[in-house]
Image (cartoon, rainbow, N blue to C red):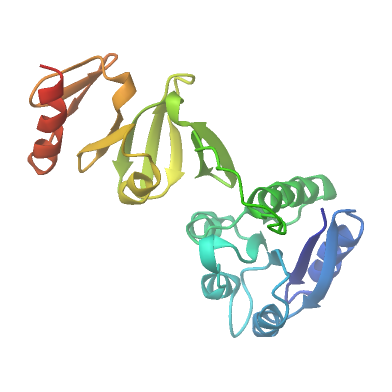
Length: 249
């Protein structure tokens, strides 16, 4: 698979280096190079086939973070994604918030560049759905038993059966699994995840918790036990929880 990309940097030497790295990477196709973010924005509107933008942050007129916020992700989040290239590490958290694929800190070498480019390739392969002519009636599509969560600058596959419970922390989630003692930290909200999880397998029991029904050890009218962890049930979700509780009597 070929990944179409552009490079944006107001420093001529830095722009030349990124373009050189792109041109020597077999699966990358350089569509254009730009010294101003406004020029890149115009090019992006003219070239919907662009998959990835290698983007400096500190630039005049329109900076890289502002450009990243303007990018149209399109339906289902499909649109050009950003890999930041910057000399300033204080922008790392903000880069994460605008859903950047990766963050290359200058000066970086080709090995570091290739690692970020490969991550972009995997992302595009994951999200790109090939168009197949419907010559016959489509077969039934199997129900997925997993989802992908954005963890740092990568997408991590998480099996539904592996999730014990999820804790919401403002703009972040902590996903606790059977297979790993350490929770996954993902930039998302509990409401967003609740909409993605199947309701016959998971239940919201608290403003801060979603639980896996298949991993409940025991329940009372006010708490749920999952292994050694006791999770409270708040008044807001008590009616739904009581309906479940009545089935256990």
